[in-house]
Length: 130
Image (cartoon, rainbow, N blue to C red; front, side):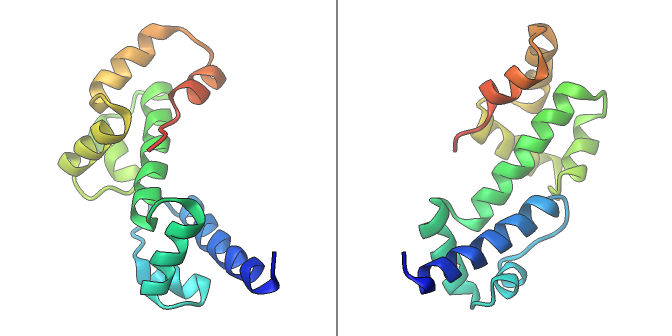
């Protein structure tokens, strides 16, 4: 692998790490592109080529993963979880959650409460793949 490719990968990883750390904060492509030291359009193309999904979809999936954990492990309301993980509205949260997980947040909470399976297995088994 050439040094230019390695440098590009490092920049994309730096931006993805920032997304992982600050998933609950408002993040836009321009801010992430600044972290990677590239233009917003180049960032979006390169991120997708590197990780197989757009930065927006990655961030949505990351937020839903965190929401899944909170729904399983806490009694916090679905609306509060929506805002904690960075969604701007409960409707967008529910729709995105359903698109990725296949069930609504409330249904997911009911299903996970009834399972009685250790958390480590639940997390591995229910990790969103989209």
